[in-house]
Length: 325
Image (cartoon, rainbow, N blue to C red; front, side):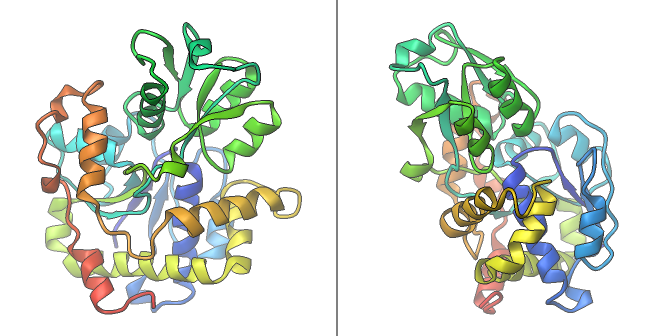
């Protein structure tokens, strides 16, 4: 069975991916659904998952940079951003991306309520989750679109993950930063406002992918195909059954299904309605765009041929067979 690792990034997409697989576990034959999932989720969540899925093995992993933790911890399948995958590959990692769940950016850049114009950001702290990660790429892209130099005009500071980034912004440690549902709800309630909407422009992104060890995939092509099939069928189930999906999403995001009903509904509609495709094909242009943005923090990817990191045959095969219809 493949062992899957979820880093502490992109919480709603990660949760939707897990939510989708939980739904698939109840809808597909055991032989087609992996039953060992590994999630870096310190502080809880395993009980809810074990209740919802077919008794998977859940485990947390040590903290640290995504590509290092995953490639050095024995996991065969992981879920994280394309920027991390490209960095790992450029550094000699035995990795391939086989699915892309977020082909367009979900981010907005938000700032405190007294913001009036781009110059108000000069000298201020702009928070991100990690340097070189998806939130960082979003922040840099938004700042550049506003006519600012991310290196000279602002102080970009990493806070660890999206939840900590949101907490830092609400707590006053950052004047601005990127956000997406459900975190934007807390930011808007705290008086922040969107100042640049990357999501509305459908800008290409690689924020959430299924990544595998190539050496494992080469030896276990059918197991990986079954896994990708399960992901696709699960996304289809989640898209068709909002009522069944929301309670699972609430537990995986540690939200209250009743008190946070509006936030959960908005998160579901945003990601499953406008972001996540049923067939998560790998978009070469999206990887090229994020590679170019990544060069500033990782020059090793400058001349990277992104097609060497991508293997779309599993998604293509699933679509050809009508999986998820």
